[in-house]
Image (cartoon, rainbow, N blue to C red):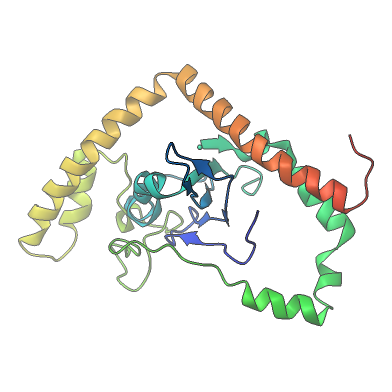
Length: 237
């Protein structure tokens, strides 16, 4: 059952915003016959630019802990940009968009008072981490760290080398804190960069992860698609 009124957003990072819908999957019955139900989180990132510290702390890092509390589906929103899967690998997404837009164009809906009222009530439910939800630019303390900023010195990318991280931190007027921050960032980013190189060197592993994720997402999406076809009166396939 899909709860359309709950559409939480994890973090709030530029170009890597995570649009999440919450639903309740079939209950898992334990040996003691008690039902345990996990909410489902669907979160996607746009595959544009280089991921920086703000993206990591604001959203991606939290996905690890979210897997313990929710049934999670993380995906790459390649359709919007021009378990883990590629959005275009799940055909039901495009099919649903076509069916819904054909039956109820947004222009028609916007002329309906009831639709406007219900839309205002469907406010996204944010999942905001206690720290790191909003990482600011290194050159403009009033703006978020952004991949689209003109200066590379405004951000720390996850794959920046030790020298690049040190240079970006040294440009700031932070006194002795610069050294502490530089060392902490280099130490924290090193295992991430090492694991990144390992994964990128094994394309078969990545293909397997994406295929398994797409299969899981398709199983879920196909149920919603079948229900929609039935509700719209199409001949059962």
